[in-house]
Length: 361
Length: 263
Image 1 (cartoon, each protein chain N blue to C red):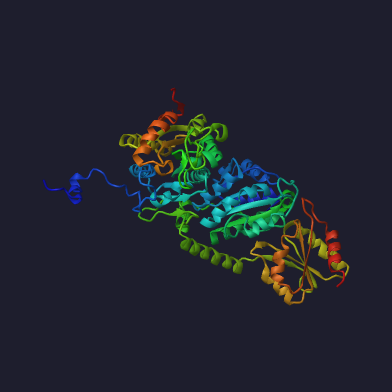
Image 2 (cartoon, one colour; image 1 turned 180 degrees about the horizontal axis):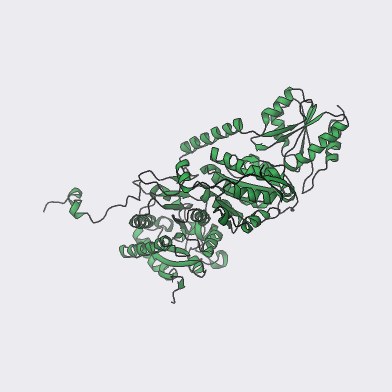
């Protein structure tokens, strides 16, 4: 059993970064995630593990620091909240194009614009459809507990390095701010410079003696070659879709209806399905853990089992609905219930909404 | 008298110059007469002379020198427009024993990347920034740069830069010299052999500061020509640069050993 602590989600994430052997954190304060950089600076990770922590002048600088650091083979991460993540979109596109592994954490708050500082999931499109320019994908993990804020840090880095792709942990202000028991994993050593040089021959950390220099770039002015590069990226994305779907199912075996919810709203819906079942309604819950790749196959299997309808429950205005619709492909009903602007649905209002949507059945 | 052939000239005993192996064999994409090639070569010669080719990471910008990584034979990263100082900051922080430099034009460093430039300088990142100032956006076809001189014609200032509409040319080098984070700030040129020799000494000093781990950032501006963007012959552009650019962007050291030079 690892060390148990009562922590905020943001703090658990920061502690996990130190323990996961992260080499560099670059970030800019923004509510509701500033505890990440505050925890990191107060923990003196440069003394604990040698980890570099730097408060950048902007989110634009932070993401480009990830570009530079990640391109040398080091484990680098940043965290921010919605408006800051919007500023990072250009950098994320470059990072995806240049195939640089790194982890970006979005503790989502209400929008659009400056919005508010309350929990939201309204950055779903931006995260899973690619918020920057060009054909690219982020691997997106959605924690629904403080425990997962910790556990998903090493997981996100494993995926990022496995596929040389940016990974995002898409949390929200609720998971970031609430305190829960968390079992911390044992610290992992940072990679030595020698290990990095051996493991990542693509990394630009000084041309090896007697070998060719390395170039990290997202530029190729020859359209035929850039198309080949895009083919390569698309092939990688298909591989990720094939191998990296993660999800959790609750009471789906005998379910006639399925709620689809992730992150904080999945926590709410765990209670909702319990309440519905107390009334004799057979409802299950599928919680996508990876928002991209989306658990399309699993939803398809539920359709084939004869599920009568799906309800997308979100803290956004139906952004996940179309991913469910794509998986369902017109074979059964897909409905939506959500609160937004920083409001959190209650378990009871989810049940109520469910009954309203499907009452004629 | 018989004519001397090139082969006869290039005899080992006559060889006084060779291309540094840290420049690739790829033909430069720059316009004939442009200063970029010389600036590239000087940096690479310095890195070769310092024996740092296996410990150097360069960061290329967006602009004419976006393809600098094709020519500089060291590990290179291509940054987004203006972000090279942020990119270099992380590389240096994570690999403090390596040599890290950025190579940036005026649009990249002094317009879109002003924030990254000022803050990397202000933090005193131990990197070298080489800043090529030709007062114009070369790659996109000769538009106004932050450093375009008053009255100078570009494709977006077709009647000359009007201060009341377009603001003043930005002396960003003087600006960053004010910051305690910069240790060495100088302005050079590469349009004549003697200017190139001086520029090379400046570049060497900048890199030596970094290798010797002297706290602070070293910044070398090179005032250069853009004969295509300025719509002049290479010779005319160099003369125009001497007559117009140098009086405004005066050559010489601005800050040495962390101290501003009294003028």
